[in-house]
Image 1: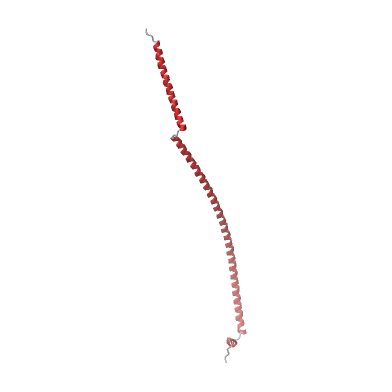
Image 2: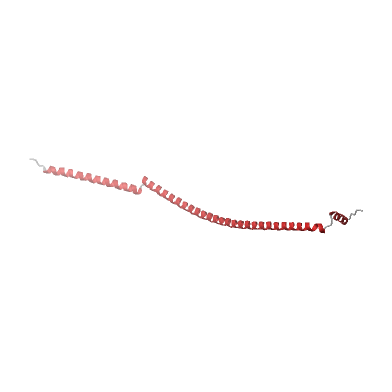
Length: 160
C-alpha cells in the first residue's frame, strides 16, 4: 500500500497557497490600477479637464457678450425713446404751424374780400362822381376856349 496522505498535504499546501497568492497579487494590482487612474484624473491634466476649462472660458465670454449686448440694447432703447419724444414734439409743432397757416389764410381771404369790397365802393364812387360832374359840367363850366384863354393869362402870357 501506498501512503497517499503525506503527498496530498504537500500538494495541497503548495497548490492551495499558490492560487491565493496569485489572486491576492492580482487584486492588489487591480486596486493599484484603479487608484492610479483615480489619482491621475483628480490631480493630473487629462484632456477632459482642458475641455472643461475651455467650456468655462466660453461660458464666461458668452456671459460678457450677453451683458454687453444687454447694455447696448438698453442704450438703443433710450435713444429710440428720445427719438420718439422728439418726433412727437415735431409733430405737435407741425400741427400748430398748420393751424396758424390756416388762420393766416382765413385772415388773408377776409382782407382780400374787404379790399375787393373797398375797390368796388371806390369804383362806384368814381362813377357816381364822374356822372355828377358830367351832368354839372355843361351848365357851370365856361367853354373850353374861354378857359384856355384865362388859363393862359394866369400864367403870365397875354395875346394882344
